[in-house]
Amino acid sequence: MTNRLFGAVPDELAMPFCALSPTISCSTALVALVLRHAREKDPRTRTTDVARELARTWALFVAGKSGNRVSVCGVPLRMFPLKEKGSIWSHAPVHATTSGGAKSSERTREARVTTKAAARALGRAGRTRERKADMEKDEQSTTQQAQAPGGEEKQARWPRVKFPNTFVHPYEMTDKSGKAWQKAICTIPDDVKVNGVDVGGFSLDYFLRDFHMEQKTLGKPIILALDPKEPVTLFKGRDDERVERKVMAWDLTKAMAKHAREFKAQRQAEREKKNPSLDEDASRAPSHGHQRQEREHMRNDPVR
Image 1: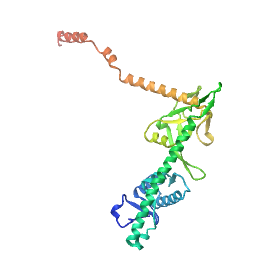
Image 2: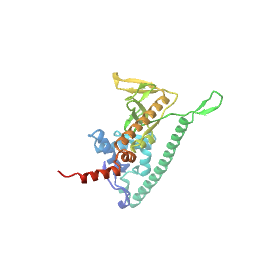
Image 3: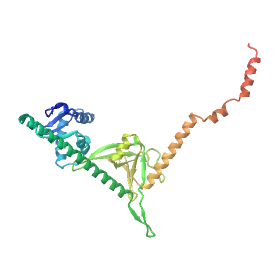
């Protein structure tokens, strides 16, 4: 990977960038971002490793052989936003500008502008498809119809269980086809009882979506939608020490909500104990008449 400036007018460049290959370039900021996160997982990661992986991933993406979400040196990336922003793009071979003179340089620059415009359009279309798919999935999960005994159809509600932010631990899973998925281990707080059985410390494995990751990064509670018809598998420990429990989604949701209410009430009682109200302070304080009697007694009492 080498730093290069393309075109006859370098001052027109919007950002510093580098060449990943003779036909692929990307912003220096993108390389630095991937390198920083990759080295957190493997300090031996080199800049050339990141450049090689970015070039390979981009080539697969523009060829339609990979999806929006990819992994570069273990760092998850979304290609449509990068393509729309122009953080990475394809162009004519770099030697074309040196052999064709000013006209060749102008054609290369026009081709690059056209490529960026097409990338923006494709990025918008891709995001629109993603949003539409997410909305359809939400609609399917929240509006499934169940046949009532009286013959009337009623909307099937999916229970929502709320986990404290620090009890959700995201990780990335790669399937057999090489596609990366965002998942999380969600741990149940201590003293949560489902039908009298203590399930505190058990966890469940859950696929995360973009709004879940947004809740996690903002420090908000993470709300999971559970299928009311399927038992939820909870687990604790690994390998031979793994223990599993199966609970129904509604039972787990009610137990978590009850625990949250009790925890909130306990914290409120502790705060009130440390900071009593003004009425309690006033009741404990001596009255003005009592204070006046004490002052008079002190004046009349001879000093010894």
